[in-house]
Length: 257
Figure: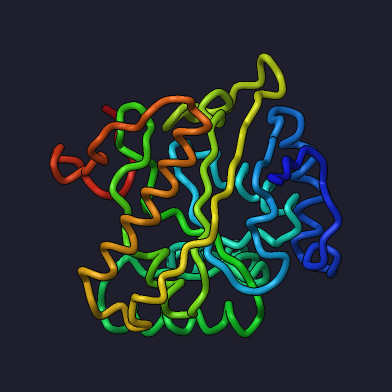
């Protein structure tokens, strides 16, 4: 039976003292003031061990909502973060203390080695990480998932760990895409979250050296995320996934149509 989580359940990882507790004491109650988060399929997230969680991404408040949801499901919310952020005073040490995973936006061999190293650390410490497979906010005008990047699959393949698809809907009522402030009226917008079955990417070499296999696995992940979102929205996604390159759009950074 699918489990719907509305209140915080007890969990082993959350029970261990950490910097996350200090953040959660302040963040979780504040988020609860403007977001009513409902989680379906929480049992799909492993109670322990490494994993890659792959959600859709369409507003800039998504990471905060996802972080609170992951915490409520009993795991510490760690994200893939740009390498440059780790060099920022104060922020860098906080990211390291939280176990965030640095990522380089490059396809160099050095970046590949860092992916392997990051995956190895996740496995050795039994940690999970949230990776947005789209790499940025979707460019799709109707906020459906766009073409995915290979980062989530690369990290999962390097560590031999599963990718768990996740979709959410409702954050656009709190903060519109590219908006600079959140909406506090009316209070407590409903945000629904659903997790899907874990996806194995065992066919992908740990080195990610087979582009066609890597692309096919990424498409499977994006298909799963899109299917979950269709259920939340009660409608069908476009038959062809949005590809920024076909619309003369940059793949990263802010973009407003």
